[in-house]
Image (cartoon, rainbow, N blue to C red; front, side):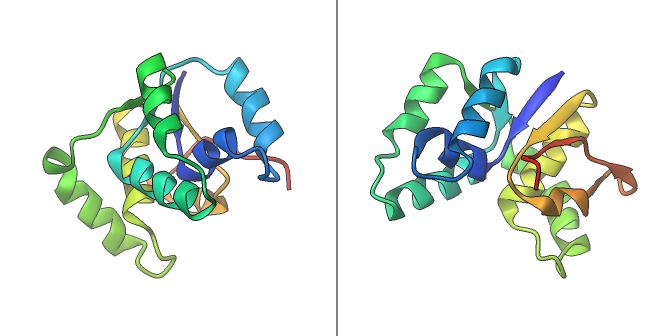
Length: 137
């Protein structure tokens, strides 16, 4: 199984004050690495961490340790990303979410590790549910 990681999980792994911190750490410890992600997700995570006065250096440390791997080329995938964002403009879909949906399309055996319930709405390849790992609500 390939794990595709979203912004909220990255923030929860770093910020012990988040409600999902314990859950994210427990799940991350049992899942195969590296977790695939995108530069858009890292940008969102760095912004949210800075807002909460956390240094984004931990994101670099996660990459250096092999926990996360940026695995999407915007230039190669921009047509697909644009189409996804147009399809889900009413949700609305962020660029980061579009990159994760696209990663799930490129990695058939993937599961999206997220805090975002919108991944229950999104579909890969137009009509297939995306396997997600979300905390129980």
